[in-house]
Length: 170
Image 1 (tube, rainbow, N blue to C red):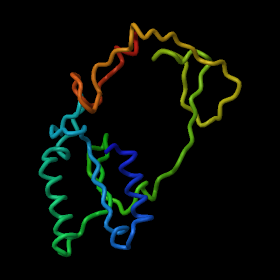
Image 2 (image 1 turned 30 degrees about the horizontal axis):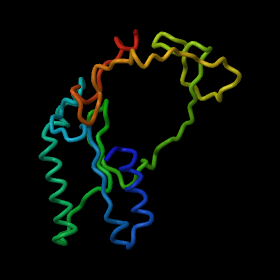
Image 3 (image 1 turned 180 degrees about the vertical axis):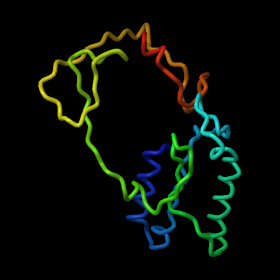
């Protein structure tokens, strides 16, 4: 399950679950891995450091705690949300998602009409768009844009984040 639908399902069950136990029994565990991989701390070209080491053991520990609480009825404390902060490379817990301290911002894509390359004039700005010129690019299906990886499910490429700057110079 991908992060967007994972958190949507989590929140919908907490709001509309069929019983109080179902609503309160929702938990999310979201970390720096790609689908079906047990390779952290390295994902793609990024190394998430020591906090991501032993991920399989941490996952199993969390699953066992969940079963101890909800199947065996043991008094086990499990945070509602456990998530990995990329960049800081650390795990954190929360009672809700989005995080209660989230400060929502609205941003818009903007340009002077030449945002069609990595060296273009595109901006991410809090200002709503005005009467900018439209951006244009030429798409040739016989010459598709390559990638150096990043795919999550299947394929021949290594999944995960990679530097795409050479591709963007195309």
